[in-house]
Image (cartoon, rainbow, N blue to C red; front, side, top):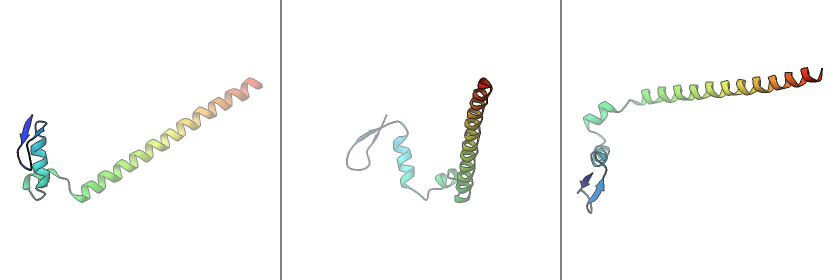
Amino acid sequence: MDVDRKGGGEELKIKGQADAERRRAKPNSDEDSKLRPSQADLAQRENELKERALRNKVHDCFRVYRFYRDIFKRSISSTA
């Protein structure tokens, strides 16, 4: 653990947390700008995640449809 001495008092931090908070406090640092993706990259990633979620939802709907279709078919065949 590190001790963060900046600010009003000493506060115990998990190792690396104090450094991470300091980096976040400096939004224009070169190191952060290299690591941070651009807005276009973030928008593309968001769209990819939305498309993936939609595909999963559609897949789940078809799976439920097939499940109930099979139950219905079995109930009809057992009554015949």
